[in-house]
Image (cartoon, rainbow, N blue to C red; front, side, top):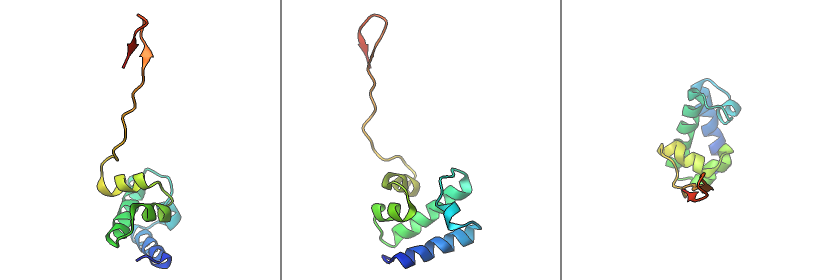
Length: 93
């Protein structure tokens, strides 16, 4: 399934099965029915050996979003550390 028409077909099938348009499925909504449809599509594409980046491009998302969507866990990132002076003038972490 490396051909764009096969990916488009998968998108149309998932959207039709879920009772929504492809545009709605791939949109920005965080409503469960749209998230679940995107997850189903991403899993189908991943099972067809598409890379995270390829899936993300087809779905119009960042690859880390697709990883979280499929695997259900956050992507490892460096922790955000903010230092600021407290009232004593010393830096706190």
